[in-house]
Image (cartoon, rainbow, N blue to C red; front, side):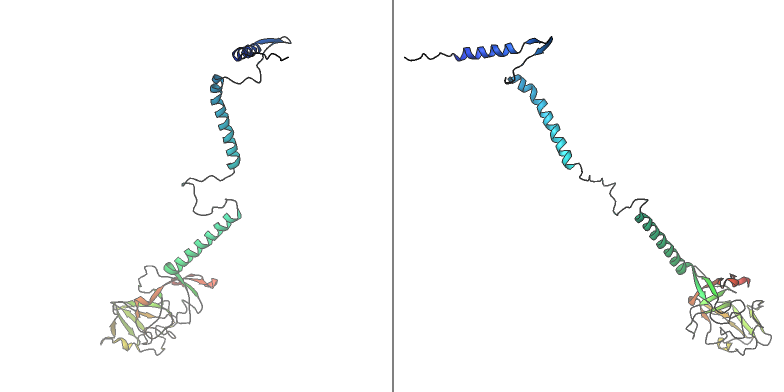
Length: 278
C-alpha cells in the first residue's frame, strides 16, 4: 500500500516563512523590557545591503590605512630641499662639533699668521755688528713691507747686494735723485748739500776704517755724486766695521731688492721697543 506524497506549494511555503520572519521582528516583553527580536539566519534585503555598503567600505579603508601605517611608520621621511644639508652636521653639544670648531679656529689662526707674514710683516734676525748700537747681533726685528716705499733714515732689510748674496740690514742715507758727498777729511756726510746730523752712529762718521772706495760712484769735482732713480745709498750705523754702499761689493741698492722697513725689536725682551728710539 503506497503512501500518499504530501503536496507542497512553493508559493504558500514562502509566504508562511515570510509570516514567521515578520512575527519574529516584533517587540516582545522580556522580563519587563521591550526587545526587538530579529532572526540571526535572515539574509539582509537589497536595501539593507545598499545602505551598509558605504559603511563597510569606509571601515575597510580605515583598517587598511592602520595596517599601512603600522608597516611603514618607521621609514624616514624625505626632507624638503630647503632642509637638506650637504655635509654632516653634528649636534651643538657633541664631541664632533667641538672638534670641528677647534680645527676651524686653528686653521683661521694659521691663515691669519701666514697672510701677515707674507704681506704685512716679517721677522728678521740681525747678523753681525754693522748696525750697533741701534741693533745688536741676534736681535729679532719685525719688518713691515706692505706698500712700503723707502725714505731717508729708514732702517731697511735688503735681500742681496751687488756682489753679496746674503740679506743685510742698513740705514738709508739717500734715495734716487739725491746728491751725496762723503767728506772724509771733515768726517761728515752731505745730502743735497745739507750736513747730516747722525746721533745714532757708533764712533765717528767714518771712524777711519779705510773704506774709501766710494770713487766707484764717479763723484764730480766737488765730491758729489747723484744717486740714480730706483737706487739707494745705505750705510751701517757702526761705520768702523760696516760693509755698505761705500764699497763696490755692496754698492748702490736696487729698490726692488728691499724686503721691508725695520720697526721693532721683539727679542731679547730686554731690548724690546721701537728701533728708532734707541
